[in-house]
Amino acid sequence: MISGVNHITLTVHDIDIAFNFYTTILGMKPVMKSKRSAYFQAGDIWIAIVKGERRDDKRYDHIAWQVSKEDFNKISKKIVTYGSEIWKEKPGLVEFPRTNLS
Image 1 (cartoon, rainbow, N blue to C red):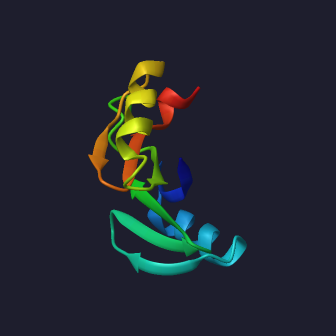
Image 2: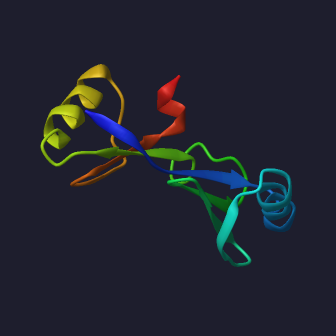
């Protein structure tokens, strides 16, 4: 059903400090950096950081799961039936807020 993680997006307070941590300490490959965000490659997974305060509106902190087209409707229905909220739906990708995972 779920074939892997597509990407993870996290909110950080300081892009420069986080960028240095992800590249220098963790060794992730930088893909893009701006004043408000940065993207990294960690193996086959994309990690995105967005500058801001931790928010309760669920727009930034999330995990996007890679799902086959054949399983997309089935897993989406299971997520909703379980009581979680799907934030974005695209064939092959299901995203839901990190706060709904606990």
